[in-house]
Length: 420
Ligand code: HSE
Image (cartoon, rainbow, N blue to C red):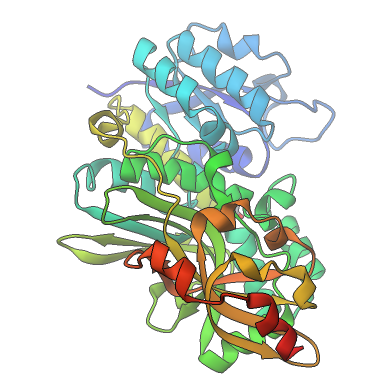
């Protein structure tokens, strides 16, 4: 039987207002917004004044409100709202990927104890129904890898810089004014937002409960014009990708890093605020999901889909996590390109092997393999002026690590000095 949904909404920003507008028109959903909690009552709002409150308890203590929609920026406040709502037996919809990724252990316990639906499709890839897909269609062992562009702002910025030759700062300001970027855009450009999203995908896709702190991530801040020239020469694009690939030992390699993407990849043509996810599965081979990943209405569309699912008490089951959590693998090889202003910026000893070194007047670059665990501990990858980009199909799992350490570059310093 369908539930009648009486909603308490937290936040009336880009997405909150979008949801309000859409629900006014979609009467068939049998869902009405009873109260909206906001932080700044002085702002002019496009909704009747009597709907608004600044007191959380007007929603959380109202027994007639059976659904809480949480759409605020502050992750700590969001956790308080969501956890209280669940303990008060309200169903919850959220889009707060930072809060969800950082608080998964507590949120799983709360869901198990109170048996309330807690849905968050909008938290990953905006309008693309990726979480429900992983939960339902891929609730089995067939999924091998997830590789996606999961942050709309950075993809928008990369498109503007490299295709339209617009300056980084102007492109970022545009992503902010269009409502794509986070309240703190550093979360986008540093790759942190994508790491939060990957944490969520890891749980639903591979059954792995981890923290975003365990996900190696770099953003787009250090990508250099010379990197774009290199990519152009190879007919590649540079994209910020989030990856989670099951290796032969059953564990999963996961990271968020800039990557060269070749024409053969479905991600090659994903531009602007669009997101795209390639799922590789044992029987179906490749599947590609594509859609708008940021912005008012694409995000509202995913929230709306969750609201709609609440009419029949839909819940995530986390089946894969309950069956087996294999954990993440840190010992595999990554094939990378690194460019820098000076060789002194890199620790060449960290490379397991090097297959090309090149020096131009503006820039030096090297391509080669690095053990992932070495990369994860390396501080030089975050130095200003150092740009690290994964090569296409950069995850290598077939190498003999012991052999590699002995075989290549016994004295990398000499090799470098010889070239500069
Ligand atoms: N800042 C995020 C992005 C919003 O650009 O993808 C959607 O999660």
